[in-house]
Image 1: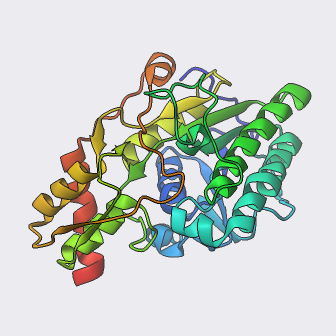
Image 2 (image 1 turned 135 degrees about the horizontal axis):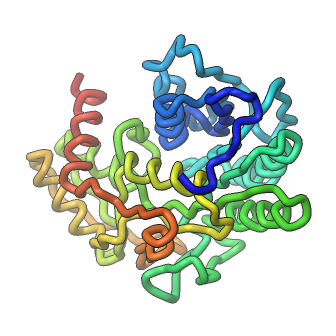
Length: 324
């Protein structure tokens, strides 16, 4: 693929460092990189990550795990071709409970990860987020939209940490000539999500499997778009191997209301659950849908997994976790 790098080690196997490597998305990236014959170093402090996500890879000859906080100095022997910076709390429950750590990983952690890329002359990819658009005033959101973020609201610790991380990534790109990529990740779901992470898909599935009421905030008319994890990781890999240094949205442009999602999950689980409504949290975005024109054009990428197929796989995972 265009943009792929020559290996520094002189072999056909590139070396990739993945921060947040045992988190929900990081673990899928580690898996994909191993499948594509990368030597992988996964770094995680296990605050929100879980080694169970990569337990099936234990003993893999091309995988090394380092238990470390990415805000500390990163030292690695040998060549590094790619640095994939995924470390960060990413669910509302986590970043509302860990606001300072969230800000530190977005600032100090990004600084350390970029420092590693600079030292090793590696290509760097930042896992950013659709949350940098805040509660958007334009719809759908394209990469040239600057966002509508409340910097002092409860979600500001996450939104501003990612916005700062993007600014630092571009500063390293311009000042030090680092080869950088920025992916803005929209709502993604799939197996390995935590039951209690506060995001809508695991919350609804858990409530449905227990036949408890599904909690919908507001009147449920707020919209989201949901991308299955395998689609997203493929897009991220393509972005790293591409030639663009501009931010790229990755997500599923199929938009639905939160109420529609709740009804669909009740249907797919065969649950007896009802739906209850609670007040909308502060600064909760009313609409969220990616414009993926840039991803289609530059990466030849668009999601393939349908919502029903993805939800079926995710429900099966949670059914096994909950019901055994």
